[in-house]
Length: 213
Image 1 (cartoon, helix red, strand yellow):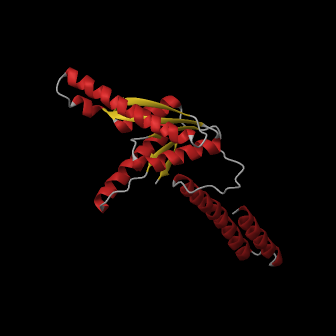
Image 2 (spheres, helix red, strand yellow):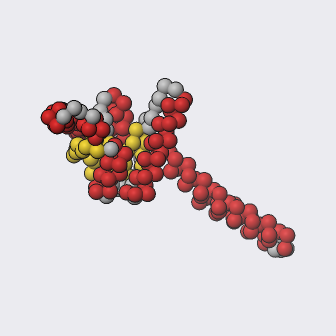
Image 3 (cartoon, helix red, strand yellow):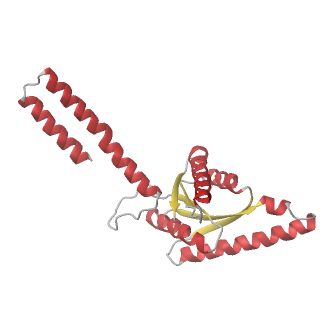
């Protein structure tokens, strides 16, 4: 867009000189140049940002990455649906030579629903152990790509805990999984939920959000 915008501006300025800068021509030239400067660069930026957020791979010969040394947080639930999310987080960590942290959250309401303190503690220990297994699997996946990753298991309300953890880590990137539901209504609800979480991460933690499918 730099080449096209400046090139068209040069042609229009040449036309302005050729037509001896009459009032009507000058107005048209100025408006057209202003229009190009307001649309072409902004449109290119929007396309690039959308491609980045949707996880489109970078060109293999890319030598500059402006999020170098990024602090990347990857919330994970484990299992096959999380593999694409792990891969995207690992890819970003490799590109930026940044820090990668996998986060597993045990839902607080599952613990609070237990009958009695003893049952709650037993269930909490089991869920924490499961979370550690999920983190270990994600770390193994990262190690296979020569990326060192740390992990943490927390207990709480999932969205609030993700935002809180991103704030504590001063995360620059948070990788979220894009929902894929069976029905249109479920998909719409899930998309609204994940975009609301993305907005909260940007507004409250100052982190970029990358969606992985």
